[in-house]
Image (cartoon, rainbow, N blue to C red; front, side, top):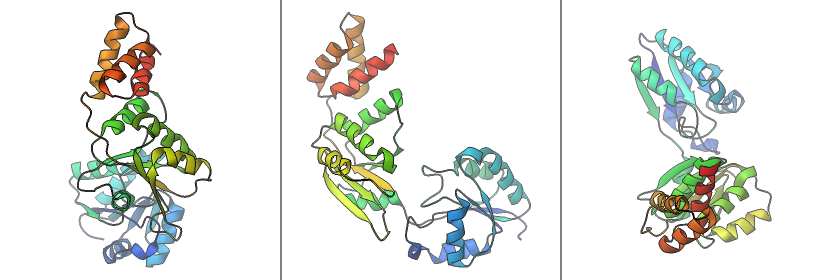
Length: 277
């Protein structure tokens, strides 16, 4: 154990243990304690590399408490590692609070880079990867969901989203409703694994395809960029709100503004209904 603790944030394979790097193997083998999103899945990784550190859980429900324990371990001079189930911790996974608080406390923080479902999917999609947007998991309901979908519809860069199997068709249908069914998407699943699949086509066809199948595995969806809109979604919603204030119904206001701007009528209408909730 060294005089000063150090925190390592380690990307782990997203499905294929053959992607373990020499640096990851060395870091896990020399760690005093590993904080893992799922200790059972991490046990398989540790067995694969032949490492035997202490293993403790760190997930969304206990992140605040565990971060305190993690800082205590750093204070004792331990080498501490954070891993998530797959990919990079803190990217749609726990870890950000631990990194922030460790740095504030003066402990060195190092990242061990590795596989990423985000960059793997955006390259496989073929929509261009010089610039792209990562949205993580979409909100499940309410204004937050409507506004996020509206931004995706008008985004001029590819958009990458994570989707759980049981919400795949629901999210694809929601994307189709704001982009139109002709927008291209790439639906990728089980990246780097034996049954890796990359499906590319229109989002309308994607809804049909995956409605007829039982979605299984881990999904990453890439939405092709759309044309630049003449008016921002926020501005369009603002115009519609002015019409409602002047006596128009939400339906009529959404229809008029959508026709004038090209912004999705549904996204405008849902924002107006949220105002009345």
